[in-house]
Amino acid sequence: MSISTIGQSLKESATLRLNEIASVLKAKGEAVIHLGGGEPKAKAPLDALTAAAAMLNTGEIRYTPADGLPIMKQAVIRYTEEFYNRKVLSDNVLISAGGKQALMMAFIAILNPQDEVLYPAPYWVSYSEMVRLCHGVPVPVLAEDGSFEPNIRDFEKNITSYTKAIIINSPNNPSGVHYSKQLIRDIVELCEKRGIYLLMDDLYHRLLFDGLKPHNPYDYSTDFTDNSKLIILNGVSKMYAMTGFRIGWAVGNTKVIKAMRDIQGHMNSCPAALLQVAAAAAINGVQTGVETLRMTLENNRNVMINQLKTFNGVRVTKPNGTYYCFADFSAYEKDSRKLSEFLLEKVRVVTVPGIEFGMDGYLRLSYCGGIKEMLEGLDRIKWALDPTSPNELFIGERKLVRDWV
Image (cartoon, rainbow, N blue to C red; front, side):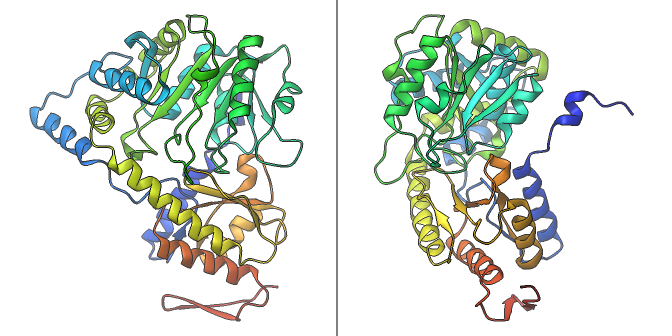
């Protein structure tokens, strides 16, 4: 069998693979604790469910325009005005099957072979593979000072004549870091000066803690014409706890949005009508669910950070937002894949290796689940790693014995 070069070179999504492993183990009756996921326990908004049910009752679930239903595009237009203070038109908006597809459509629309895409490390696992799917070259940018936030000089040192785009995801998955206003201003100005696309991955922008507010890239932009290379990407998965609905969107200049629409039309015809109606209802409906989720996440974060501080040798930067913290476990094991596999095998706790996000020695730990399960998972990890722990641990009725050094 002949497989394409791209098909052979891509890695599967580490987070989706771990979700599958956790599901299989749970189906077997294993007492698995999943600290690797990005899916909250919160339910989808009632407005979304009611709207979807009403449409189902009509029996009229049909094709939509390739770039989305008018009702969904109008919801995004209103959202953009409310949260970005920017009025856009319908031709500036593309609705897609999730934020991931919106980003993929943007890459296909703007990248030529060998074009380079820059993004800060640590980074979301799919960025590099999505760039490779377009025959582009992914270029992670590490902060020279060892922090999770590169400065503008770190970006400038990585820019070449092939640089086509920069992606900024703030607050960041996996670190939870909310990039500074100065960095966002500098990146917007750099991209406009160099004619580089700036893709703002804002999936978590309303899930900020400690009174922090999102930074609006439009505040620092001077080009609002169809030559603007600023693209805003978002979706309902994270803020509205609608991960399974798979509806996202992009806001950009009319030329790039038209190209994305045409590509999407050939790729999957259109986003699902039923799910667009549900997503529009969530955006237009009561917003208390977003704030409730944000407050729950902030509390969970505090609990996780306090617990991690009891680990000898573990270093962690307090997340400013998202569902995750990115903890340095290199004092125990520098190979994060090896460590993650060890924790899954020995104590049935799912974590995501830091190497998948571009930084080895770290684990991404999620606090979007229940506190009880989260604390038990951390207790199991501590027991597995701490040589001073008791020799035995019970998981339900199963007794574990430390048979490793």
